[in-house]
Length: 268
Length: 283
Image (cartoon, rainbow over all chains, first blue to last red):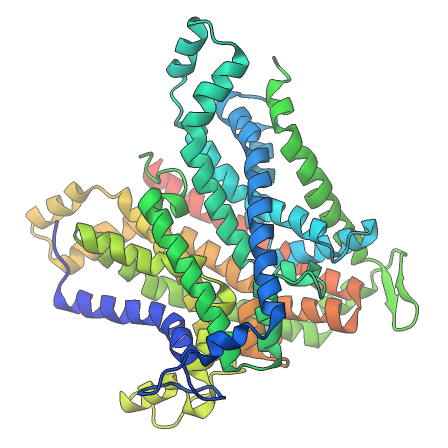
């Protein structure tokens, strides 16, 4: 295999700089000691991080996002497991259509989903409630949960289950002691990917969140629409730090490439 | 036993029937309802909104802008993302994983935070991007990025770039390095190998990446809303305005449904074209 020449490496450096610049600049501005947006050079300060504590709406939005992500991802994984087993193990009429339906939230623009949820939830009387948020988030993160649970259900060695049955294990015991432990890593990574997607979602959520049920990205978005000040940069810096930490953990545990490409691209 | 797969998928099916299919159908229906400043939404069946969206020059201009931006974002992503995926693929073990993480990682970082970064970089005439471009001698006067289509295109290209790198990367993994070696052994120069051997084989990856990036760019919301401000509207920010500011829900629904239909037609059409074109090559 040939190596990259100097020109390729120069291009690569510029590309990486382009990818990182906006993320780094947010973190940089967050450390400003000034009362306005500026790029601190010799004077750094944590004052805008302390300032977050004085804005309860950011704090409560953060906890709400955390709970929303954890809950909706857990339910999405719970619903995905039986569906993944059905898709992986049976050939039945409507199998492709069903899979396409479950994957459709990836295809339908979130702006359209947001509008549809807003209309629907208002009509049935759960507009602007946390229950509505959970329902909507289950739907949008389900494709991620399903993709990874499906990958581990397909990769499952059925001989192990057959061995358990031949040794006298009941169906329930096989499920609990053999199948579930084997698909557990897939479930965990499916949950994690679902959680991150729920935690970051803004386009759909901005429609269905009301004051009092705003998630962190929605709160940040609405804040930026009014004005951009150092406070929102320090909040963003915290969000970036949390995401990067989660990213590194997930990369170590599962491999980011596998996680994002889904089932090994070339069947690996 | 025949019912087993259906029983297993029942929870998910019920959820999707109730929370996806019904709301989408209601939205399509909503786009045919009437609306007035004082009477609110009237559940009648009229074509007023559709007529307005399809004929009014304001909507025509706005949809034109939406798809123009999506086109340029896709072009930028393909032009810059594909070479980067190729370079990444030629890297050695520790660097490859590290830079893959650096380039794909932003995909999972909040899009609001990433766009805020661009707003800070563009920031008026004294923004860092302009300073860098001027000191590099590329431009002489500051370019306007905030509240312009250029700014939206740059920020969206950054937000969606990982999808293109991912798609091309996936295509590169399927490439057999022996073919490259064979071409070199037969006397082909590096440029010929790239153009005649590598590019044709990763083209399906570039095209499928382009389809994803185009669809996401045309329906993006947070980035155009923050960079474009209140005046420069695209389809998604206009629908948002109709729903949450003007409260003309039927008109907003018509805009959203039209966007959905346009995207489905473009994405399905393009995918078919790509499949047919490459089925002959690889089939």
